[in-house]
Image (cartoon, rainbow, N blue to C red; front, side, top):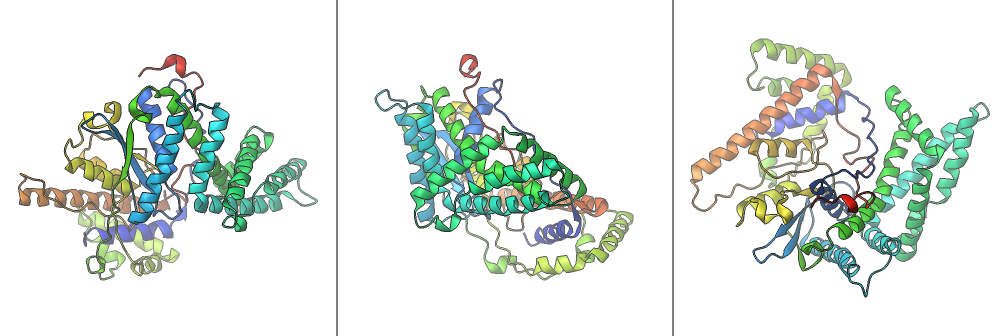
Length: 463
């Protein structure tokens, strides 16, 4: 691992040095009535993982798989990046409560109309995610004020002044986040009303205006408030889409064990490497580049020149800043869950997964390093599409020699995996140096979000 971190540190430095590319505009993802059952199921699993991701900054990023035990009982198994056992157990109880709402609604004596179930589920989801929702609401208020200001003024065109009035009305619908801790029930009620208002705005001309201004600002590299506004609106609406998907799923799979006799469990989060394992002597750009795998002297000289071209933009300073960071690598939730499955009875066989769908859902798209890892080990398990960001706080799972395996062969395999990971990071370094533009996203979650509804589905189910 000591040889893996230097090129990763350099890659992060290049990302920070280069001009940021605008995030590509996320395509709207309306319900797809022609989506296959497996795709709908994957969306459902991702939604369950998303509602378990309670806090920003990555600690509660969650991966989840729906398994079938040897007795045919469904097991919802999840893992998170950095959660204590107490926090994991609290999340387990919250998830059980949500699944129980869906199960109870399949019983004739406790069934309620979908709009009523929608509100019950949304209350449960928002109450669990208060910390993250508070952040979204604060960001919504901030970006709205900035956008309103940019629309005002005596010389502003009429469409901008009209937009300002519409945005002012939306601003008034935002609950006071400072009051959230005093009366959570009231805060959740106000948040639901705010989300409903935001959803209504998506059908009005102001939505097209926001999209147009966001696209213009992304193209020109100015006024990020419009893009940020579009993003935070999408994140708030994601909770409504979560609930819509859960309701649709319980109608689609209501006659299966998915909402019948199930259990929910979790895996403990990984421990970071001890400080001694990540205490690395800072290196220069030159010393990292010269170890580029499979590079000729001519190619190395070209890379040195590209690095020199970035020095006026403080590449050395960015690298020095990165070396000062405290690196505490953890096993990302999806890797942790995948590793546990591969080491326990049944492994990654289809029969171990609900409906033979080998899938691990995640609350966010998986990072670039996880994508590299799963590609290198050639797993048959599928995951969400990834995002291009990398993180210094990433590590592979602990090396555990499986019963009956050759110890040296097992260690050699993992050394090979990390060598290939390192090579891929170096390829990213080379590409970034040449292009001098980062593909790193400001946000590693999607602005818009997939969902499933019953529109056109129930008559075309292919289960």
